[in-house]
Image 1 (cartoon, helix red, strand yellow):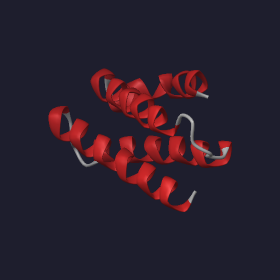
Image 2 (image 1 turned 30 degrees about the vertical axis):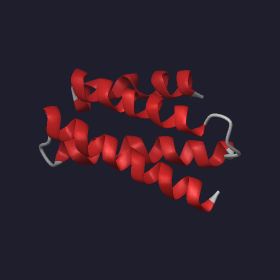
Image 3 (image 1 turned 30 degrees about the horizontal axis):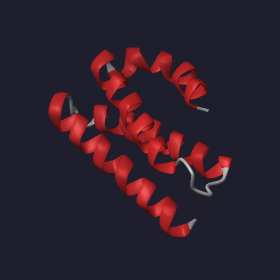
Image 4 (image 1 turned 45 degrees about the horizontal axis):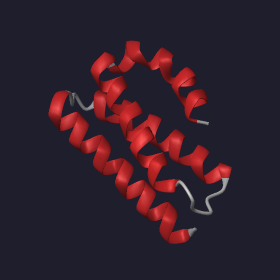
Length: 88
């Protein structure tokens, strides 16, 4: 699933910028590490991926970049994971 996410989002580099795209991938890898050995449906993981892509684009549209972008996206990812694990 991770590799598929990477492949699907490679086209987003043009929209986000290289650094911001890398930040999104870092958030995805860190997030999915927290899901290992937990009972989480594939659907929930796919939802997390879609939410992460949307958040990445939204933050970029707001003009965020650099450290603010990184912190905001990682925080968004953490909140999404916490919600997923609380309901799962």
